[in-house]
Amino acid sequence: METTVMELTPELEITLEPKNYPYGIGDVPLGTYAAKLDFMLWSKSGLTINCFFSLPDSHQKISLSVYRKAVNQGRYLAGETEVRYLPFGTLLELTVEINELGKPVLTDMVIKKH
Image (cartoon, rainbow, N blue to C red; front, side):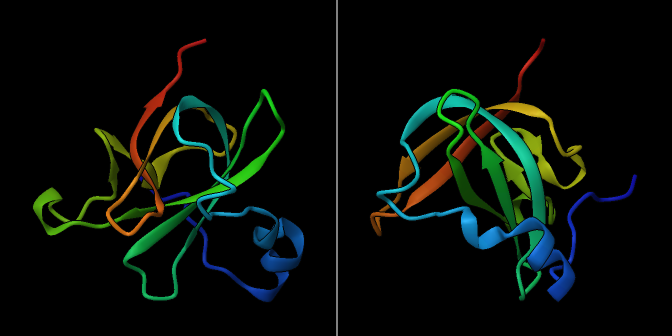
C-alpha cells in the first residue's frame, strides 16, 4: 500500500497553503471533535507527519503532527490509527490534549463511520 503523505515542494506550498493551518495552543481546540483530513506532509526530518485538518462545524483549519515511535515498529500512529495511508477527505474524530510543554498534541484519531 502506498502512503498518501506528500513531500513539500514549492508548488505544493503555493497550492495547499500549509501556512494557513495553525498549530499553536491558542489555535488548536482541545478535547474530542470531528475533523476532515485535508492533506499530509512529511516533515523535513522524515520522522514526523504533519496532518492538516478542517473542522466541519467551525470551518477552522488546524495542523497536528504524528510522530514515529520505535515501540510502534516504525509506524506513525495516532491512537490505533496508522495515518500514512489515510485518504484525503477522510472524516475523523480527533482527541487533542496538552503535553508537558504546553503544546497541543494529537493523542487519538478514529475514522468516523457515516
